Image (cartoon, rainbow, N blue to C red; front, side, top):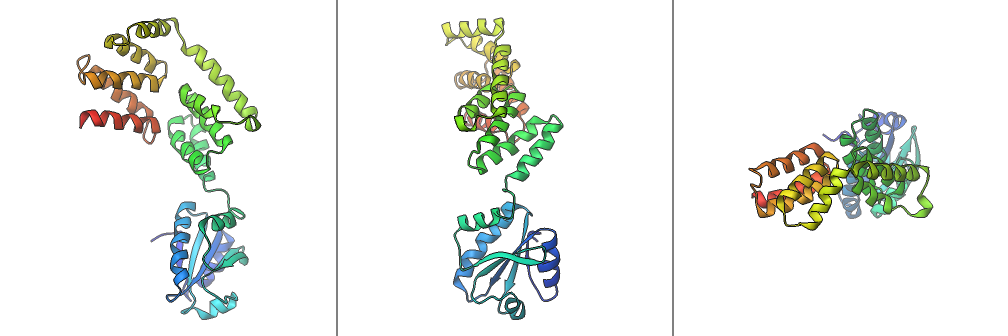
Length: 284
């Protein structure tokens, strides 16, 4: 049973259409079995109800079975959709509309669906759980069409995790018009972390690797240094190159280090997913 979608009956109509609209938005879909456009519209409304995850209730009214309710709402054609808020119809439309138009209508009355993701991510960040916040903010960034302010917030999470490359790539996408105080702060943090991560030992190993790129032992030691300095992508890239040539390099320790780094990223991390796929192609 979906808590965000309900079939209206004579018995529950008052509770669903009036009482529930005092607590959240109710989208009322008047339909009938013989109505072909209804069959196109209803799955779309159900999809949106699932996506908005409880921000509104989809109430389905069979206009043939519940003619008094349809008449009370002044329904003249099917499908008809009405938005109920605080016990009153406040908006709506007749006929099957495209998804974009319905989204635009909902956005007049609801927060964007990714706002809930950001709220949850902020709660995790307040608990210093940046690994848990990361996939939520990444999803919000993608669903928002890469909104710059969300991108800057995501970059700041990457910076807390000392993953400078991902942060830098996100900040590079921010256009000058969107470069606000939060952006400037993230750029300053990025610069400081870049400087702090560049230790003499690390630079020496990078120079050795540049001079001897085929030396697997140097690459392995550099990967370990990278992982300890939170240069995660660089570490994984060096290790996967070693493992492609010798899966049991360093008595299996290279593979062990690789898998430990992935495990440290946490579930849902896109970097973990990317490099899990790469190791799976070697293992299986």
